[in-house]
Amino acid sequence: MRPPGFFAALGLAIERADADEAVVAMDVPTHRIATHSLNVTYASFSRERRLVRRARVASLRRSVAVAEGAVVQADGALVAKALGTFGVRRASAGA
Image: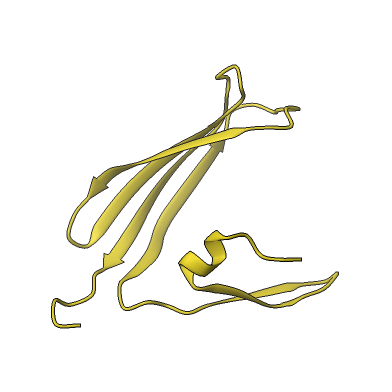
């Protein structure tokens, strides 16, 4: 099984996967993002086979970012909402 394309963009690699456990490693870049908090609220159950995720950066400061997102069905019905706060460590200008 090939990992999704975004794995490479995030520096992720599957080291091992079996019926009991999966181990995913991440090479951390010089600019880092750490999750301070992530809250997901599930609004409804969905039997849809295709859901759409919409997300946006609500605030981006020097060291903290806030992002929000929603998962909706094709008809626009809300399935889940998320709000996350992330610490951002940017690469220095000389790096």
